[in-house]
Length: 268
Image (cartoon, rainbow, N blue to C red; front, side):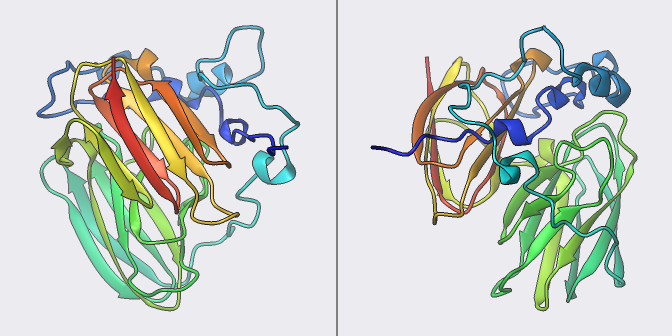
């Protein structure tokens, strides 16, 4: 008997995507969301309360009660910033920021503009490295970004504080590069890879076939998609290998967090 698949969507705030920054999607064929039209995080928090309205997040129903891990996968996140504090400077449209260091550190930066920030973390041979967003009430991932080198998406709410920080737990040398999600290279057609990434997808299809193979028994897949229309936002994931068709009207930005191997193929 095959083990029941355990979707990880319940571990995330189900309606948190409602108050997102406008996706400009520079260089893509689609239009842009007006940032002023997006609700604030206060509105988002209210929307996240249980109600009889259908969820904005398409997912299959869990076949079992969410485990404690699924309820709070970030239970062991730190509550205090590392003692070492390094300022990366300002992240603006067309102008990112980069900082290098060694050992655990709080990396601070200022976002100049209305966009989400992509964090590119390179920690080489750092064993056991973890990266966290500073714990706030207005980020969909108020905790672990990942455990390995890769790219992560943070700071997606339109009214989030321009002053941001992320916390690194490591003994090794590391490098962090920060940029607007609109400055990512635009890609189209089938995409594949291993580990965490953020893709700026062009195209005009309405769905995508997403396939995933975990790196090990502890691995999971978390996907967050943001289109030019606020209603296109999706969160999906699983703890078992899968191949599913996900409603994903292109163009848009897709953030993937996993240690495993994934592929994304736009379909009609």
